[in-house]
Amino acid sequence: MSRKLITINQVSQYVGQEVTIGSWVANKSGKGKIAFLQLRDGTAFFQAVAFKPNFIEKFGEEEGTARFDLIKRLSQESSVYVTGIVKEDDRSKFGYELDITDIELIGDSQDYPITPKEHGTDFLMDNRHLWLRSRKQVAIQQIRNAIIYATYDFFDQNGFIKFDSPILSGNAAEDSTELFETDYFGQPAYLSQSGQLYLEAGAMALGRVFDFGPVFRAEKSKTRRHLTEFWMMDAEYSFLTHDESLDLQEAYVKALIQGVIDRAPQALETLERDVDLLKSYIDQPFKRVSYDDAVTLLQAHEHDEDADYEHMEHGDDFGSPHETWISNYFGVPTFIVNYPASFKAFYMKPVPGNPERVLCADLLAPEGYGEIIGGSMREDDYEALVAKMDALGMDKSEYEFYLDLRKYGSVPHGGFGIGIERMVTFVAGTKHIREAIPFPRMLHRIKP
Figure (cartoon, rainbow, N blue to C red):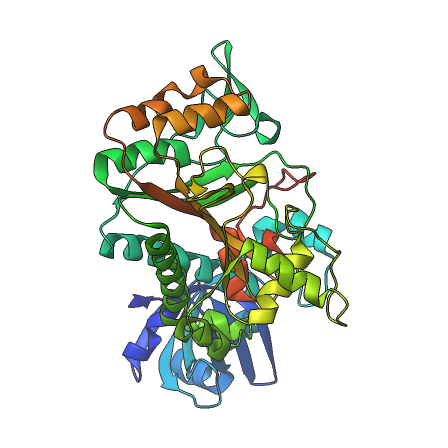
């Protein structure tokens, strides 16, 4: 078979021409002298149609019948080279279909375990390596890819340099109880839960830096928002103010949403995501609310019918129900700024004139998706940082390099981090974070 091999997402360029597509059979139907194949190749799903008389006319009665019968015998996930004429088809969501002129079986597939019927979550997760092939899972991974692409594009346009923080660390950073410890040639080491501390060194060298890689949290959490291994984008930048940092974070999130709309429109359609709603998040300014105003607002509405959260006092941390109510109340992504220092990280800079609050922000996504960004201004004064570490009883010898950054030309600086999976879940409109990463690692799940 002579081939002009293309991918499904290229078919619009070849209307009226004969092409070959390497693909898998996602589904099939038809009867008698006509057969329909739903094909997929990773770029899109696409319908191909075979007419038995056309095969007989081209190959003769015996050979044409044999080739047509091969099509009718194809099972789910068989791999094939399908050759045909690209035709426009207004009835198809894709807008095109393939009139099959020839087919070649590459790899057979018998008793494929994931069928169009409903399957339980545990079964699908046990077969995650195969579940990834389904239409919605492909769409989610395409959205993930668009977000990653938009991340690199945004930071490149805004003068950031990619900076690779280590995965293995010799210190426990913030909280060793949430870290995975391993033996590093006889001494303890930890899998990174954030590249931030190292990234601050990068910011002192290069001005604006970001990293993107896997991080690990040994939290024994079973919520729909948590993974033990996920991909984090951290950014650090020198000389910016707190408000300028929030401006940058808002622009970044809007760029990610726009990037998905531009690069993965069919994925959003497959997932039935409300694109107009996503566009509204781009068009409107994000809300900025202080922690104390947010608590007061929650207290004022705690007896409302939709207030499915517990009473909280000033000084308490938000739970997921509080975050959900706040973001839904404003209807747009909402920054909660200036949290109490008592439950935030040691490196956060206090609000001027109010040492009980720190210059930080969490960005809450609407529709119940919760926190997607956490960031702060970093304490840039050496003496103030040492005093805070002493007050917390921290071992400063574990942070010598970090303290050095305040001794040699310290400047105002800040940064933020975003878990890519949470952003994927929000933009895709999916309900559980496990589908936002190819192979999720969660409490009690390490396979496949």
